[in-house]
Length: 299
Image (tube, rainbow, N blue to C red):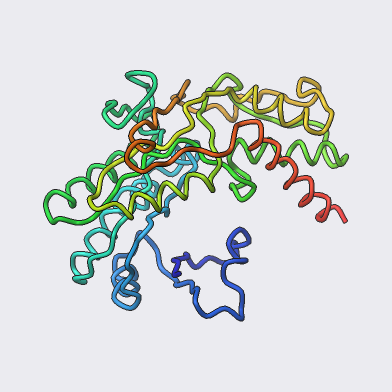
């Protein structure tokens, strides 16, 4: 397994370090950047991968309003650079393009499926729409084996701390351990279709094992509010979320996505995929993981 990592002034790979121990030779990280075509071409020529999973992005929706140009470069044009690099180097890998439920934005129908029109509501979502359609174009123009996975929110204990689910579970752990008293959040009424990342990665892999490439929505078919997530997370440690959560307008987006709910019928039918982890269990395992992590940090 090979991965690409950006060079930064400080190491920030804690969430994936376990995959690349010093004694392991089968897995390797390469320095590269989706905004730098030469590094992408070099890595692909050297590695000659059988499969490519393009998960790279500036993926924080709220931040994309602050850095729209960089978001477009890494998310949209970055995907184009990867696709064009496969064509220029002459390799023929199977290519997974990570789409996002955020592309549906101001939803045109509920639930959302593969044929639902896109209506992006952020620079991030707009860039993902471009990445989706340029992937379709390369599939049709050059015969590239590329699948778009339109994944609804997929969470785990490895989720970045800036995302609302991890912010909640880490905040719950901090408050339970006496390290904090309050948790500031934005729109508590936003509804999302939350699933477990491990289940969704299985769907990604299954897409690339099919005889022909196609596009798939991956979702649980259930929607829950941020408020529900808070209620369950605080209940896991015997606390009432109302005593600790404060709403801060700083965390509201300029244009909000109110509700997302996916219809994964196609993935279930063609891939034989079903989500295995229920919402309550997902919240429980994330809270437990952050309690353990925060307790170690406190010591």
